Length: 170
Image (tube, rainbow, N blue to C red; front, side, top):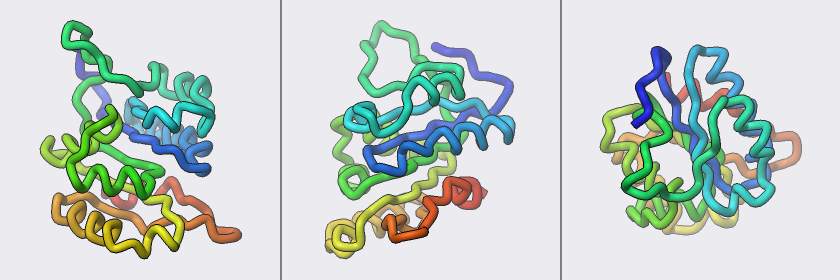
C-alpha cells in the first residue's frame, strides 16, 4: 500500500470527451493548491482523448485505467476528495446505477461511501442531457451527496471551466 502523503490526495476521474485534453489544467491547479493527484481514466479516454505522458509528468505518477490484482500494492493512497471531470452521459448513468464495470466507474461508485467530497463536471450534449435516464441519474447522484456542476455542452465560446471543481469541493 502506498503511504499517505503529507499533502491531501485528489483522485481525478477522466472520461472520453474532447475537453479531456485540458485535464492537465486541473492537475496543475491541484498541485498549486498543495494537493497530490492521481488520475484514473476510463479505458476509452486513454485512447487519445488527452496527453497521458503530460498528465503523468504533472502528477508525478502513472495514470490508472486497469484493475490491479489483489497481490499488487495500491498505487494511490486513499483520496481526500474525488473529482470526475469531464464525466460523460455514459459514466453518469453507470455511476448512478452502480454498474462498476471499469476501474474509473468503480472508483466513482465507491467514492460517496468514503465520506470524502465528490465533485463532478458533466460534459453532455443537450440531446443526451434531455434523456430521462440522465435526469434520474443526476437526481440519484445528488442524493448520494455528489456535488454536480452544470453540464458543459460545447456551445460556441463556452469554456469547460476546470476551476469549478474547486468551487464544488468548497
